[in-house]
Amino acid sequence: MRKTAAVLPDLSPAVADALRTAFLRARYTPDGVRALLGSSAHAALGRGEPEPAFRAAADGGELGVLVRLLLLGATEPDPAVTAALAPCSPADAAAAGLIARDGPGWKAVLDVRPYAEEDGPPWWVVSDLDARRQERDHVTGVGAASLTLAAATVRTPAGSVLDLGTGCGVQALHATRHAGSVTGTDLAPRALATARATFALSGVDVELLEGPWLAPVAGRTFDRIVSNPPFVPGPGRVELVYRDSGAAGDDALTALVADLPRHLAPGGVAQLLGSWLHVRGQDWPERVTSWLPDGIDAWILQREVADPALHVGTWLRDAGLDPAAPATRARAAEWLDWLDVAGVEAIGFGMLTLRVPERGPGTVVVEDLPGAVDDPLGPEVAGWLDRVDWLRAHAADDELLGARLAVAPGVVLERWSEPGETGWAEAGASVARMDGPRWRHEVDEPGAALLAGCRGELPLGDVVELLAFAHDRPTDALVAESLPAVRELVRHGLLVPA
Image: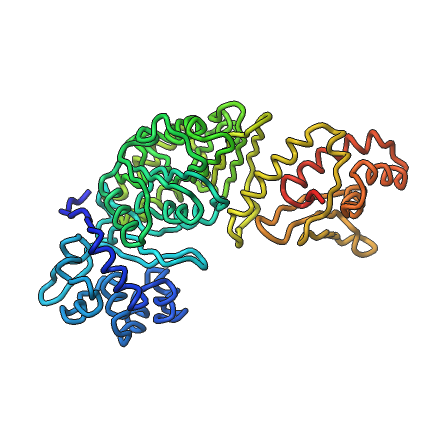
């Protein structure tokens, strides 16, 4: 790895307040930047194509100066920077580690990026520039993984939240909107320094603790834990702190999943991103569920599966390396050799949600997400936890048969046909949600009729009895056949308590 000297950011309250005043005055906010650049240039910037943004920001006044300086990496003249940062002087911003002299002008030393939740106040996230991507302690900014986790996090009110491995502080920022107190931990001093700068600029209060994994919060419990840990499976070494755990394969995730529940208060929820190995001759869901302590709720969602070559190539490019360079090829060969020796056929990536239930046995479900999810996953996770609680309270068959259920809004019945000798012949049917993860379940004719009868007017048992009479089927047999499917339909939100 290359070595470059880098000063840690250190913003005094006065400097942070002055910069926040300047940013708000110039509208250096997500809405302000989007309005200045326009949709096309803003989208191009998100793809890593800066030229349209340079053109759009050329006549943008003080906002244009801040965009070119802090987002686009341009050197801006002293008078323009002085005006744009007022009441903070460029010298004070430089002393805080955000900008530096570059000839007669100023250039950014760190990425300072506007960020916000929908309908929320603006924040500013401090992270490293791309020029440091190959440094061991590089601190990444608001990337795809951060956004994925943020969109999947449960946002109901919580007393305390732990952001484990906070990095530049993205998840902790979100947590301040719904938690009474927020704690962030990280083992990298540079990450903690950038997170501290993020929180100072954004005007939020977060406790920051240094140390590996859960060591800084030994003996403490939280209502929520959220984590985007170094989850990339590979040889047991650390080249990049944000990516590599130091443990081989998915051993670090194994240990973390086993340890997290003891830091959750009763009813507490942990959510984290992770990657797991698909090992030759082993069932991957069995591997992952074997890591879980007894008695917890766990929902493990696999979003993507990559073959070893794609996995290695993706993460080497993420580090800013040229895949064709001899040194990069040597790293790729070593990584691929390790995966081959370990019997790895593929690498899964997804979301793990863990909960310590307040009563009753735990529920463990492992499944693949059915395609892309356009809607934020957080409400779906919250709904899944509520539905698991409801099913636990109706675990006995007579309790479920006594419940009134209704087909959820947005659920449709789909039928498909296949060509035959005399035309189209019906081949099957399914019920599907048109929102969230688009869960889909195949149903036969009695199943479709049962769902049609679930209008919340009659207990489920009465609906089954009527269906048994209509189809000339024994009621007990239809109950035994229907209840497992009903439980799955409730868990996926296609049937809801009336």
